[in-house]
Length: 364
Image 1: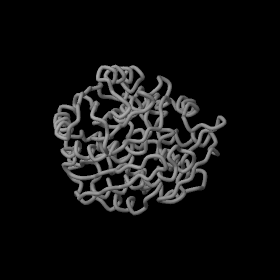
Image 2: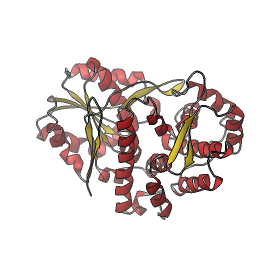
Image 3: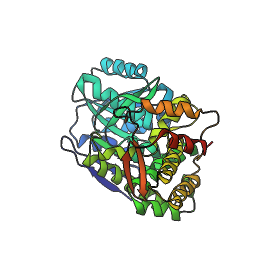
Image 4: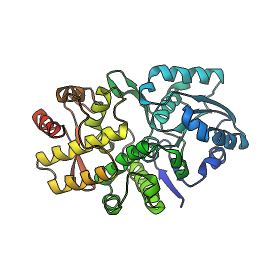
């Protein structure tokens, strides 16, 4: 089961290639793009142990001159300090404007590698080879790159589109179960904001919380439909001037929770799941969505093994304060993505603080 999805952009369109065992074709796929000879492969130790040598062998067999560097795993290392290390590697290996950084890993590696590529020599090539479900369906696509500031997630960054996104579903076999569930949060997001058919397919599936219980056909649908949804939205609004903001469904409160818990207690997908539950209930309280629909959403969240309650000890007042640091704040008003029906959402800054507080209190 192979799929090729085009991300059509005015400046630089590219392909999302989804195919089993495609990791071994990485070198040839990049050679077809006529990139420069020098490549730096960026990963983390656990991913590199599983797939690093295969990726390097494929690149070398296609004639690339390859160096590699591993950053520590984890959101708390997504900092300017880590980017400095990538700059040092770029300098050591004399990367040129035609050179490429390859991100082999999850969302953290993808975001940091993309940001380093965006800013080295004012922009060199980047290729995304996502190894987590979350990165495959979301963060590897669309060119958002960046690092965290101590007071907020992804506050430092740039838009820098990849030349290629290569997805090998077989690498998910080594993904920890918790990380697989985290990726399902983003898949559920696409069902709610864009693709009612994907939502109903997940609703009909018995298991969503473990890869081994998921039928290959459903996994293929999840990857293809989610990537297509992201490509459609990015193609219409590359730099989040309007429509692309809907991709932040669940992320407004989710990012605040991640930041307040020091990126250690909940992972990104778990935080987004909590944020979607909150956003769904806010929409109900504002009369925009039916309780029955938010119950359907929350049932899928639970089926995916994701949380629906706030982490213990997180202060609601601190969450509301943290919302002001969100990148989507405009004229001091927090913008929320709220559903109006399955597959359709709207963006609004008309959410009273007391409604947010009331919903969060109900999630303790």
